[in-house]
Length: 360
Image 1 (cartoon, rainbow, N blue to C red):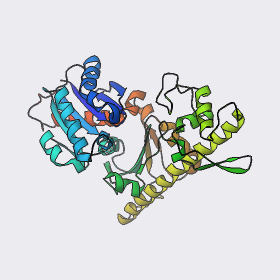
Image 2: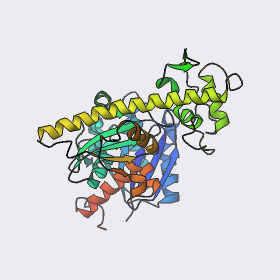
Image 3: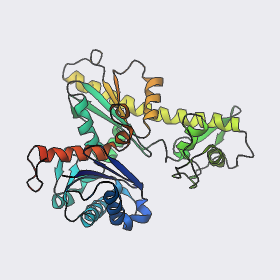
Image 4: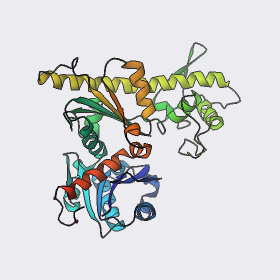
């Protein structure tokens, strides 16, 4: 019995099975969406074999190759069906349940960007009788989701509602343009505007600031060159309309620190909003946050960003931390949404809810 979870995003495909095996591939949906069926077939055949049951979640529907989210949802679902015609397909909804393909096509508003909800539903099981907050920092976005007694309790379910509530921060450790984080930087006590161009991303700032290691195999950068210090210095210099020969590495390091601090402040502000919401929910239930400091579940490829924010701004404002990459081996934490829908889909079999699939 092969059960897999698919998390199909606008830039990456992530796959996991119910046992924690994982695979991923970059795919710029806005450019190469026609390659989605063949990419899925290749990755799954190479790592997992023919699936019997697929749990699907997505964020790719927002790619600008689709006129509407409904068009994007339909495209992704139909591509998965094309790639795996013999598999049973179930799509996760933000209402907290799976839907058959035809029903999912009729409910695009519940399918769109539901991966955060699948992850929160699965991760909340780690804290069945207490308040908690899940913070997942990815390459592009950060999700901050309040949990209570083993269930997600978000204020927002659509992306726009989640942006308003602070539960979605469109800021990640790798792909976020620097100009989306800061509009000015300080150079020798003078304020300098930055270019409103995709010259550098947050990964360059984290690397130049000395807070992450070089990743020569990563070319998901502003100019397509590897994520190594020499290129990151030059990309960051371009934000000031110069190159690395015109400004010192020391100055670029100071600028990188300012960018990192600004991004951490963005996430801090959102975390504060979510923490306040959770406190309000506890007050309504006559439960004290002081006696029940929320557990914080940390996941995502940018988990180090979350830990830095918590260390710097919330040293005493939360309870225990549970880092998924320490609870599970690292690839699961970096493919958490795919693993979540795989596990949730596996439960369909365990709970005798899916007649088409034999029991395990």
